[in-house]
Image (cartoon, rainbow, N blue to C red):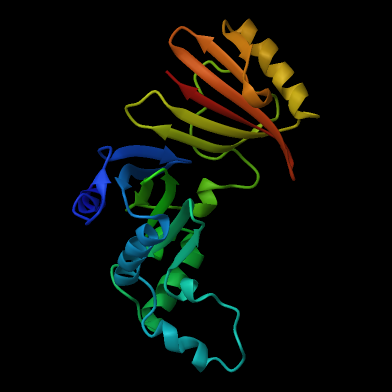
Length: 253
C-alpha cells in the first residue's frame, strides 16, 4: 500500500484502480492501474528515474573501466533495471534496494540470494507494463515488498505452490506451472504442463470432462473453449511448447 500510495502523487499519472492483492505461486503481490497522456517513452523515462534513485550500483558508469577485458554486460543490469519498448508498448522491471548499493553491500546481498533463492534478499520487485491506445497510455504496476522464493515458486519436478480451480477436472499427470489468484475477487489463472499428444486432443478431453462435471461447453475464438456453470465462466486454451502441451485455465464471474 505504501508504494501504491506514492504512485498517486506522481506528476502526470492518474490512478484508475485502488491497489489490489494477488497471489502468484504462493508469493504475495500488489497491483494497480494508472493512466497518463504521456507517450510510452516519456512514461518509461519517469519510471526509470525512480528506479535509478532507489537502486543500482554506486559508480555503475565507471565499473566497466575497472574490468581487465571488454564486457557485454548491459548498463541496465548495473543500474538494477531492465527496459524494453516500442512506440505503442513497453516494460520496465527493477529491484528497489532502498538506495544505490556499494559493491560490498551488493556482494553480501547476492550471496544471500544465492543461498536462499529469495529475490527479496536483493531488493523489492517493481514492474510496470505500458501500452498506448489513442492519446492515452495505460500503466499496469505490479510490486512486492515480501518474500519471492524463486526456487519454491517455480520448481522443476512438482506442482508450483497454489490452488487448482474448484471442481475443475485436471488431466492425469499434469504439472501445475502457475497459479495466480486475485484476493477478494472471483478471478484466477492456472497453467499446466500435460502429457497430451496435441492441443486438440487436450481440448477434446476438457470438453468431455467438463460436460460430465456439469459445465456447458462452447467453442471460443482461437480454438479455445468456454465453459459455464451458473455464474462461473472458464476460458481454456491449449498450445504446444518446447516441453510439451500446456493448457491455461482462466476463471472469472
